[in-house]
Amino acid sequence: MNNPGDRPQEGTKAELGRILNKDLFLYLLDFEVKKARRYQNFLCLLLLDLKQSSGNEDGNGLQTCQMRLGNLLKEEIRETDLLGSFGDNKLVVLLPYADTSVGGIVKARFEGTLKYYDFKGRGYQVDIDQVCFPVNGTNAIDLVRTALGT
Image (tube, rainbow, N blue to C red; front, side, top):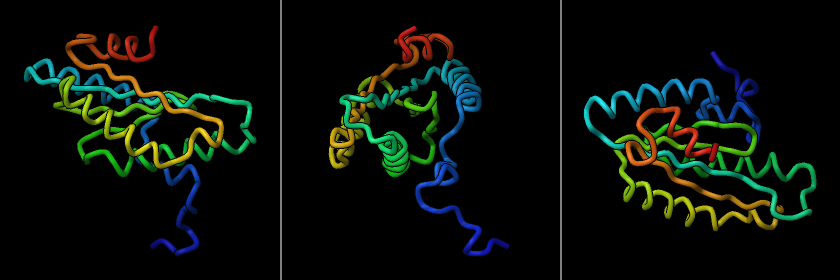
């Protein structure tokens, strides 16, 4: 039984428990791509890149922006969507059964939500890129390479 004192405090890494680490996210992405290929479905990845846009970073701004971005995304995604981390400044959302147009709609919705938080005032900006299966890649590795620009 958990005591109230055992609960994670707001703003801690434990609060981001629904954000999958890179290895687990890649494993599940591979599984979803194979499933999409088998059943001839689409899927979409949205990559959110948190970039420093000015020299106003105060040392705590990055962590605050990361936490806020993760919380905003958790509020916006469906139960079937997966949220993962590709490093300190990159989050990725897997949208199963979403084609390029649905991905574009979700991307626009995310951008609309993000404007209500002042990332620029903290010296950061959030860039969102979209890649879709099978348009931008026919396997998980191709999608990740396209998403990361490698």
